[in-house]
Image (cartoon, rainbow, N blue to C red; front, side, top):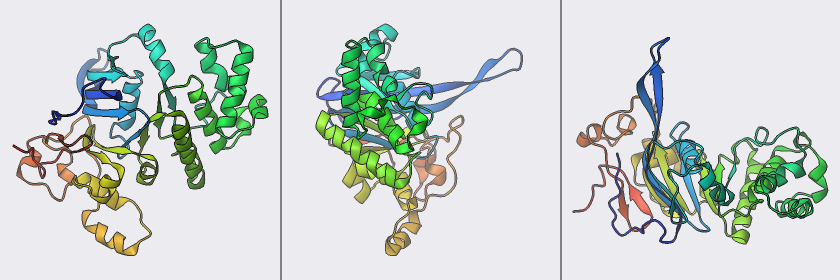
Length: 340
């Protein structure tokens, strides 16, 4: 399991809105026919640590199945945690029950991937946006109606659309509705789980720009989950690259894209399409090959070593530590050993 070596990083509550330490989420694998028993586990998330500051966008990027969405669900306490700790605004919420989490859920909201599935087709849009206000008993019906109209204007929708149903809107408009609903309780943190991946590219840009405008206006922090590097590059302040349940590299956006250190990050960037033929040619040497191993039976040592062109001796036997340099950049790779 990875460990963070930088002793200068701030502790929970020292300026971080969200802090995750050594988070693991393992799913049991059952077998045995009529009398099922546990025969193994899927290590969906294994020893993940990161923090999010107020007003910033922290993105987790990686291939499908790497554990990024499971990490988000664990942060939301919608997925049981196997081990590790989660702090929100200085409070350890790892073991909090539903009653204790209720005020926290007002401050952490979600925008899901599919705007077609995340909205109740039988509810009018105004009722959908106002639903969090009703659940948390905020204001009377008139106040909720005014708040709904304000939220619709905030995300670029006309208030008179409140009486329509979701099927009457385009995909981009539906995601605006989802964003308005997420903002109803004035949250501090919004978890965006593949929030634009179901949209056309032109609509993606509009929604990303809207999220950035809302962040600047409202001081929001985002935990942004995506497999799309171009999307992550557009919206992020800091980025974590995840592979097979573990974070292999973190850094500020510009630094990570200009000077990636981990071979997986390099290969992931190389596999992204580019309009520059010279850049495409230079990237071919680090192209990503093969498929990730099964999280049920991950390889020993560095989990990327079976696909890594730079693998050597210790990579197949010893798991690399996540070594921090400063307060944001870190890499888990034997090519960059801890400094004595």
